[in-house]
Image 1 (cartoon, rainbow over the protein chains, first blue to last red):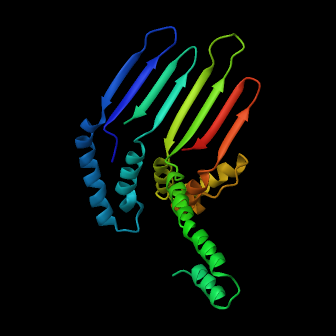
Image 2: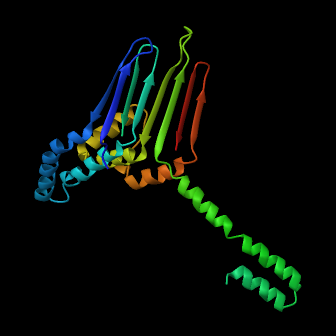
Image 3: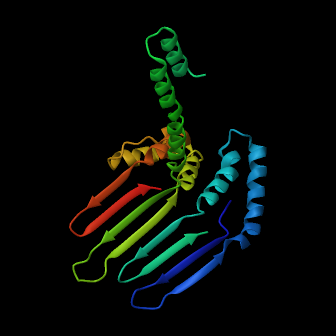
Length: 84
Length: 142
């Protein structure tokens, strides 16, 4: 399952930062036409072409993002990204 | 009936052990099935899902340390390797050449998802701890 939500926090220890909740599920309908085009291109060009496996790989890549967590906390800047 | 139990009964029939000794041996054999079950749990729980990287750097100024905490799902790593299969062969040669020039003799054409799966399985027991005067790095799978 691809991530539904991403949280981004940017700030610092000495200043108030911002925290964003990004609803990634709203992007799914935008990605859908691209996925359809890739699937059709894969069918037309044949299974041996690299395009045929592209939608599946892209889906696996997007699914793999779920659970990803990057956090950097330094005196100058604090940054955090989470995919839920 | 398993082979060990049959062997004990054969020893009893041959008179090599007394009935009491055979009883003790069979009782000991009855306790054995618990071990494989425990091992199965270990294997299940030992399958890592994330690669964790912690870096902590103490600065000389007396500030609080800089910390980096990264959690990468192994599924993402596997998908990344699959993505490499979409790279055209000409580009792979260029990547190999660039890696070789930088002292990393890895052939990306030989990198397969199955290999990474095997690597992930063996990563379960791996922990890398680097501790220097002002820097601490820890990499492990969980």
